[in-house]
View 1 (cartoon, rainbow, N blue to C red):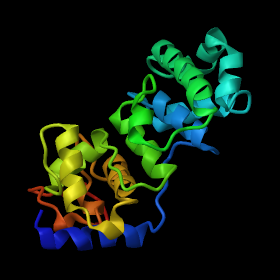
View 2: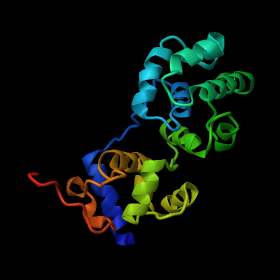
View 3: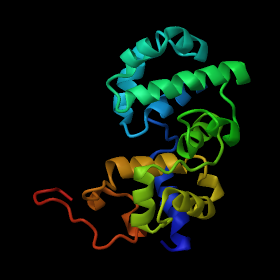
Length: 217
C-alpha cells in the first residue's frame, strides 16, 4: 500500500465507525483481562457466552480464587482449551492478589509476567483498558495487513512493528479495532468481500472479488 493511501484508508474506516469497541463483553479491567485470556483460539461470541455466567458470580481476582479451579472449569468448559485456561486464570488471579493488590497492572512487563498472558493479550489490555497505542495482531489483523499491503510481514511481530511505523498517530489507538472488524466481517479468509469493502480502492489485493451473481452491487 502506498504511504499516501494509508491516511485516507484509516480516515474512511473512522468515518464509518468513529468509536470502535472490542466485541468482548466486560465491565472492568479485570473482566477484560480475563476475557482476553480466555479468547485465545476461541471466538468472542463463545467467550461472551461463558463470561455472562461467570462474571455475575466471580469477577475479581479474589472471587475467582474463592471459586476454585473445578468450579471455574465448569463455567468455561464450552471454551476451547478450557482446562489450561482455567489454570492460567487461577494463577494469574493469585499473582494479581499477591503482587498487585488485586489490580491489573498497566505495563507490558508486568502483564506478560502473568500466566497465559502473551504479547497479544497484553497489547489488547494496554490498548482497550489503558488507551495505549498498541497493536494486538490476531489472525484477522495479520491477514488484512498482508493482503492489503498495509503492513506486510512473515509473522505477527513483524506485522506489529510495521503497523506501529505506518499507522498515523491520529489513528493509532483505534486502528487495531478497525482492522479486526474489517477482517472479521469483510476481508474474510476464504474469500474477501471486496464488493462491500469501503477501503478497497486503497488495497493492493488483486484481482478484487466480484459481487455474487444476482447481487445489487
